[in-house]
Structure formats: C-alpha cells, structure tokens
Image (cartoon, rainbow, N blue to C red; front, side, top):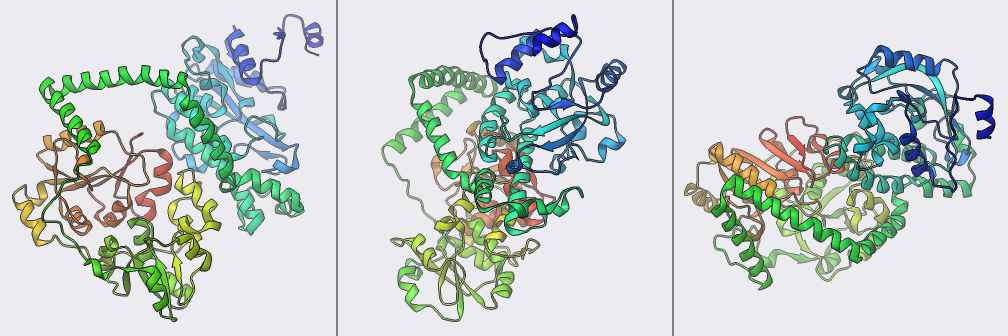
Length: 620
C-alpha cells in the first residue's frame, strides 16, 4: 500500500520500510531521525486529517511566527470501541475559552492546569524540526510520549493555535494508553516522568503529573456516574448522552469497573512492585547503584567542604558515624523534664471497655494519626447531626491535647494492644450506638481498596472529600476550628529562657510517618539560612538521632510542641499530622511536600480553606 502511494506521488512520498517489526516507539523514533525538512508532523494509524487546508494554514502560521516551536489546532473525537467510550462522537478535544481569544500560547498560559482540555492532540501538531535537538536527547520519552513532547517543545518556545478542527482522533481501546487500566498508565508514566525531568532540569514534573491525574480522574468520574449516578456526565458537554451508560450489561459493567477504578487495581500494582523488587535484587542494578552512589556522596562531601569548611564537614561526618554506632548498639538516651499528660493507669484497653459501653452513645475509635483525629474533632457536630446521637471519642493518650483544643470532655484514653481492629471493624462496619466504630478505613477489610490510593498517594481525590465520603457526610461539610490554643508548660518555658526569646526561635519539624523524608542536606541548608537571619533553631524530633546539625533539641510532649509552634517566630515542617494541629498558625507556617501528589492530596490550605500557609514542593 505504501509502495502504491509512492508510485502515485513520486518525489513527494519517501518510504522507510523495515525488514522486521520494530514496535511503535522505535519506529517513531527512527522516523523522527529520518526527517530533513523544516517541519515535521506525526499521524498515527488510527487517526486522520479532515481538512484539506491543514498543512497550508499551519505552515503559514509557522513562517509568520518564527518564535513558535510548533503549531496545533483542534481535533474531533470518535470512539470505535463502545467498552472504552469516554465522550460522545463528534465532541471537540479543546473547549477552553482561552483558545477562542488567544492564538500564541506560552508556557505561563497553562498554569491553571486542573481545568484541563488544553493539550493539543498529537495529530494536530506541526513541529519546527530543528528544535527537536535529537542528537542531544538523552531520554527518547522527551518526544515519543504525548504530554512529554508537548512540554518539551513548550520549553523551546510558545506554540501557535488555530481554532479549527482539522484532525480526527479515533479511540480504539487498543492504544498504548487507552488499552491499559488508568492506574497502570499512571504507574508507568511516573517512571517516564522521572527520566524525562532529568532532561528538562526538573521544572515541569508537576504539570505532567497533573495531566495524567486529570485523565485518570475523568475515567473514574465516568465510572462513578454510571455506578452511583453522581451527575458527572451532565456537567460535561451538552452533546454527551448520559443514557450511553445505561445500556451496559453486567459483564460490561465488571469490565468497565476493572479497567477504570484504581482501587480495584491494587493486585496489578502489587505485581508491578514485585517486578521492581526483582530488578532491584539483580547484580546489574546493584552495580549501577554502586556506580551512582560513590560519585554522589563525593560531590556532597565536596560541596559541604566548599560551603562550610573542611573541619566543619569532618565533624558533621563524625556526628553521623556516632549516631550510626549508637543505633547499632541499641543505645536509647534517657532525658529529664519529660512532660506527660496522663497517668498510665488512666488508659483502658478496648477489649475491657467494650463490655462497659453506653447503649446511647456512638463510640469513635481514632486509631490513625493526629491529623485524622483532628478531622474527626472538626466533624463532630456534623456527625452527631447525621447520626442523631452523641459521639464519645476513644483516643490514644498522645492525642489528648486535641480534646483540650476543641474543649471536649467526653472521651476515653485507650490502647488496642492485643486487639484485632479488623475484627472490630467486621463487627461494626458503620457507626452504631453502643458499639466501637474504627473511624478510619485502614482497619476495614472491605475498605482496603478505598484506602489504598490515598495511602500510596496516587489518589485523584483530595483528602477531605475522600474522608467525608468514608464518613458518608456531604461534600460541602465544613470543619469546626479548635477553640483553645495550648500554652507552654512552666517546665518548657523555663528551659526556653536559657535558649532564646520566643520571637527569636524557629521550630523545624522534619519527621512524618506517611511522607517521604526530605534529604538532611535540605534541612541543614534551611537551618543555616535561619541562623543567618538571627534566629535560634529548635528541632522538633521524637529522637535525638534525627536532630538536624546546628539546632537545639528539647524532649517535648506533643502539647508543648504545639504550644511552641503557636508562639515561636516561625515553623518549618515536612507535611505531617502535626501540621494539622497547628494550621491556625497560618502566617509563618512553612510546609514542605516531597511529591506533587502529596501537595494535591494533603494541601493544608485546601483542607482548612486557607490561603496564608506557605506550601512548597521539595522533591525527595
């Protein structure tokens, strides 16, 4: 067929026919390398152009605007496989108003990315060939994959948009992306994003991640609308026919569910992780890691010597060796002045408590982190109104400070040592009077899949809507604020008097249980920056082993740590439950996230409806 067209249009079509099947990616890469013209474009086999003036209009635009890296236009959407339908036939790819009023699109124009729908389809792009720089590309993914190519070219210059549908995308359900479950696509793309960002100096990871999250969220919403009638399709283009989803039979429903819901795909992800673990055990991987490890450590040592001096750097290494030796020897330091809120005999095991429960109360066991307990406190009155009854909190002793902050007296300090909370959840899957309800999905067998995306930080939902769904509360439910801010204990106040005035103290909180920890080098640089501005820095760490060099460490109770966070000059913290307890601080609270997905899910400003907390992504 190719040869037939070559004979029909001699000199206009140049064939490259392989002796064997190379696969789509290798084939396209070789095709790019063969281009010797000023412009190039890719048309994949299941798409087609539908306007005779397409190339003429695009080349004219590129000739007129030499600053543009590529030219694109709108695309018409069709679906050939009903089982993978996501839109009505004839829908347009790009619908944002921006493209009605603007022709030259810059990198800065795409900042409000969550609106979506602005990345022009691959079939619509005419590229200025010289900007591909194929000889300098280390990672082929830079141009082989749709979103990556889009951002890669945008870094070279803006693009020209023609608001005219001149190509057609046909979804077959067998494509590299559309033929895979969305969570598998997202998992695959995380690896590519990491590689690609080395090529682009790590400046666009958030945009690529959000794009894939949008795709995943869209497919999930379609499933939720079919399953639970959420009304999502009504919010889409008027041309979408909601009855499309009512025609599915049971088998099709199961297939749709399996391919669209990331929670159901836990087994697939576990399998992927097993494969990754097997790779990590291989000799090739270990040798590669060793080759990377030595130079990296050498560079860090050199930079430290350059920035801090040779003697300081040696002392720093010496401190790390001492910490390691103490850890290996099982050394546990003893400290005085430890403040405790409760006596040991005031804590009750729930196995004993369950036989003494009041039949008129709802017992909520807060078995997760301090942030989760704080949310239950903030939702208490909404829950009581929904349940038409009173709540009684069952909390670990360390969370008692939250009861004080909210002014609650109806709680019991408990431990669940030796108890199987999954069995407790099996007996009480939902709130019931006179029964213990585990107020978090992590111990509910039937909710493990619900919990998995949040736990792995690959969720398409933010934390509060996710938590409200678990508690069966309306989406617009508002959190109540704490009414009491704790004050410093007399013991801590006296210790601080010998260190620095409160308005000259910065608190650094580098620990978290559910987040990747940031490199020690980041914290050390932050401490130097704070000390240069005249502040004394205190590390809020559970153990002295994690204290950052150049800071002071006080063995504080949670109450004192929260009180200090509210009264000191400023707080710098890795996102953790502790941040939830001090969110009212607002100004001068600086919170760091190790991943883009972490910020999307756990943003304090989103969670508590604020805009004054400084939130930053520091890729771990």
